Length: 113
Image (cartoon, rainbow, N blue to C red; front, top):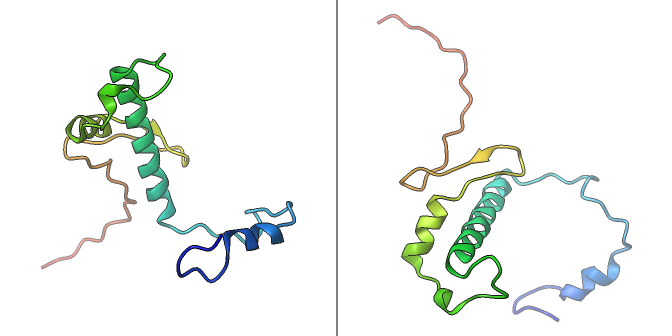
């Protein structure tokens, strides 16, 4: 199978895999990947909470009340999502949808004017 514009087919790299590959060998994670992972987890937690509230935890699948998903209602679930990220940080969102600020404070320098 080859995606439009792809230089190789998906099965090409899969067929070449020996099965003992590891991400520990020479893998360097992109510094922005954590943001992507947190975004996906936020959506998953929000959808799960919405599903449980709207359809019920025992529902065997997506109920009619979530077809289609109401974006305004889903936004409230997104804003109320909270979880411990894979990096160990507790992630929540404020009313504007912003996560807690993360920064490192360095030693300050005083200056005279």
